[in-house]
Length: 430
Image 1: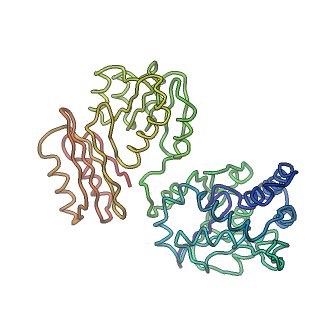
Image 2: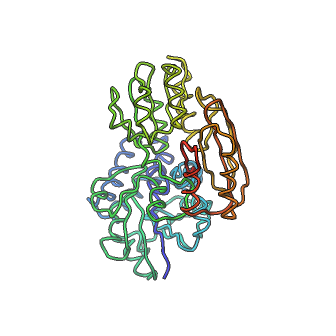
Image 3: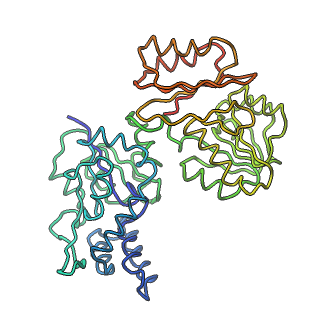
């Protein structure tokens, strides 16, 4: 009795609805294209929200497409660039769970198969509709005998497959929820990274803003140790919309405030602020979750920078109104959170470690006291964990160590690393 993962394609594995995108390709030169686009999108949304049967929605969309095989080639090229970010970074999960992952979609194999097989998903585990073409390669219909072309098609298919084990469903639409409603699957996860449908979210067992969250909840291997949607990014003052959008795209839980409130700062893992709105040194001492500050302007003073460093909080700043900082600051913050990079920080020693694939990365920030690195290595050695890369930089106050190891670890290892004397902050990166 194993576990199976039933994953939707449109607006789940990919960021978009493929038939909507196909219409934009095939109808590009049509004089009434905008009106037809809206009709197709209306059909899509009505079915996803359970307001129209899937079969009626599908038939309506196909009639409007006016697409052919050449349009499908263009679509596949487009969809490969539109794989959902959290799915893309977890390709190793799919590699190691090829037998348990099934793509089940009301979309079409002609565009789904070339996209998902690049993520190690087996062709025989892809269940979707198929187009019918005329002699010239024009789409003229679809296989109506396929259960996935019918209302309740996913339920019909899963009953035919009769998978033995716990089945988890991940999707954004009503047809995905129907699997839960039928009793076939154990839990339904409403995937909201790309779109959040109220009628679906209200009925889900769990809301998963990213695939990382799904893997985290189910204690499955993942590219990052902690889902970004669980990390609050506090934005205070005049911070450009473009910068906030970059953080949203990364998946952070954004909170925007006009001024500092201690309770929000204490909950934040990331802070973006402007030159006129910066936390005090005292506030930083009580911000136990805060890891990084991106300041659009110069950091207030030396005391603030030193207090931040002493509490394991890195600061990136840039002169006020510098045209580059809208992009510069979020990129530095993201680089630190994703890779541990401290380059161009105003209060941490400089480190730009290369990413090591197939390894686990941990960050250890400590007071600059001799012997800490030896203690870190002793923990790994005592647990017979091989170090594949290690980087240490220091300044007068702190030491900053990044260690890449090539073996799994248990909670005891993490507890011992946190317990080393003079530790300021410890973080499992990925």
